[in-house]
Amino acid sequence: MTEAAAQSFFFFLAGFETSSATATFALYELAHHEDVQDKLRNEIDEVLKTYGELSYDTVNEMKYLHKVVNETMRKYPPIPFLVRICTQEINLETTEIIVPKGTLIFMPIFGLHRDPSIYPDPEKFDPERFNADEIAIRHSYTFLPFGEGPRNCIGNYLYKYYVQYFI
Image 1: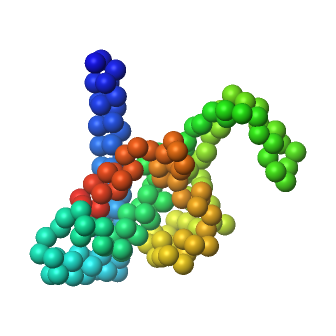
Image 2: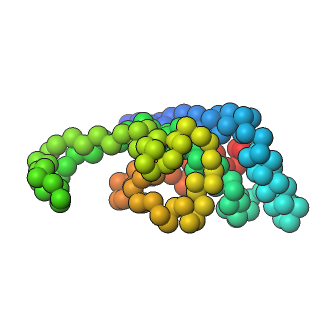
């Protein structure tokens, strides 16, 4: 039972701190970008006019809200880097680099999300980076606020919903 309690505490603490920080950064960016704030407010007003309330389904319909949250997580990732352990020796194609089994791999999420070759003018807060056509031309592993693959963050959906509902 002690392990279960410790895991529960960790999930609560990790989820609370990261989602609170993201919501705070989103509000900061909205305060500094009135055009984004107005567009988001109009979307929220439309949803409330149509459905009368906010729910899981109505929040999921808010496409611009998703873009605002994603851009916030791009600019201010919930975690600055990911750490993984290489489970088998890998020969990186197109190079002569061999990564031995057991090697710690650090992925600098903060640096990746602010790489100007991936996100032009990376310091600019621009939710339009997350239009479907923009996403389609980027590699799927260039936006990793929760990691990717089978070992990504277990709380990513709850996290995003909490932040979206808070905003």
